[in-house]
Length: 151
Image 1: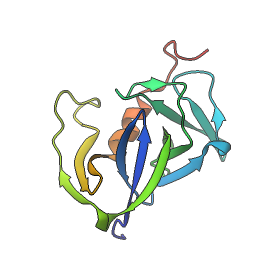
Image 2 (image 1 turned 180 degrees about the horizontal axis):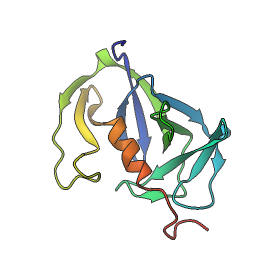
Image 3 (image 1 turned 45 degrees about the vertical axis):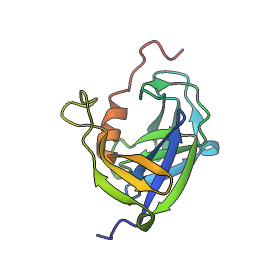
Image 4 (image 1 turned 120 degrees about the horizontal axis):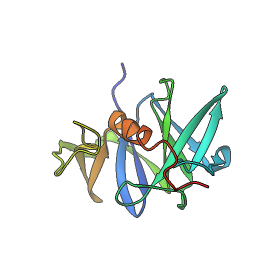
């Protein structure tokens, strides 16, 4: 196992978050995605016959169909059901430019027993919450289905 060398700095809904950049992530440009018209997924990508769903989130982490996204960050790509987060902007930050500290989220967990954030990063740009990829993937999978958002 190799040591983590980078974090992905993702922005959406006017907020910035970090995602540890490991071998189970895949970044895809908007041009390689299909805009979704049903359900809560805002876009999809077909990979070897499987449909990978990607979700746009608002500032409260609720799914939206329209956003200014430019890329999809697919999580758990080695799983049978990878899932993506649509982001407006994406940067790669070297680990040595950040100070990662444990973070205890307040309030109820959006995924039973798990919070989306378990760490925070200090950098010259300020404090940024670090998303836990496995919990984020589970949260996004829980968004599947059409609940009045799609056509």
